[in-house]
Every structure is written in C-alpha cells, then in structure tokens.
Length: 162
Image (cartoon, rainbow, N blue to C red; front, side, top):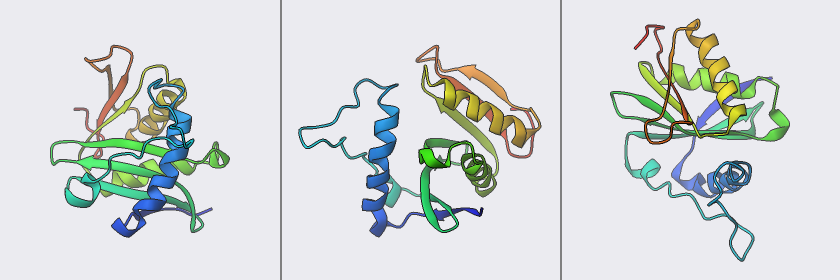
C-alpha cells in the first residue's frame, strides 16, 4: 500500500469540499454547532486562504492513487500547524493516517503544534502515538489555554524539545 500526499489544486476545491462533508459529519460529535442545513449538507468550509495565502497548504491523502482523505497545514515560519486532518473510515487501522502525518512533518521541517479538540480521545491517542514514534518520544504536551481539555503537542522535526 503506497500512501502519498498530493497538493490540492484550486481547480480541485470542489473535491476537497466534498471530502470536508465527511469530515464534518465525523467531527460533529465533538462540535455540536456543526449541523446540516435544510438540503442535508454541512456548511462549506471557508478555505479561500488555501488558494491566496502562502502560509496555507492543502493536500489530498491518497492510497495507491485513490483518495483516502486530506490534510491542511498552516506554516508561518515560526510553527507549522495541522489545521485539519481526515482519513476515510475504511482506511482506519491500516497506517494510512500515520504515514500521511509523518510525510507532512517531513515536508515542513521545524517546530510543530498539533491540537485536538476536547473529548476527541481517539484523535488525541492517534497524535500522541504518531508524534511519539516520529520524535522518539521527545515532544511536549499541554492543554490549550482557551479550553483546558484541548490537547496540544509541540515538537521539532529534528527531535529537539521545544
């Protein structure tokens, strides 16, 4: 199984927005304000920055050339952040997310912050495991000041503590 990252082109915005519908569906259990409209769709995600601002980087996650999810990164020179990360359920447990995460860390060397919303314990466990493997267990974890139950991991790609 070959996991690759492919930069999303502006002309593929609609494909990304289609995948975001599945992301919102799964994420709605943690963020109660995510609700479908009268047409049965979630609101489109505001992603204009990904086409106009060089700090934003959208990628499709592909498995053997087939769409498997997406990852959206913001890298401002000081830190890189995972803004959104999603893999389709039928790839769960197959190492697709882990491989994609490690690839994106390699694309943006330096300091990283990865945040998970409160109560999303599966995401917290996933990111702790991936970051621990990637850094040799050299990362720092804290809770977001705005929400004392949101986990934030910080690390440097060259395995130095921040």
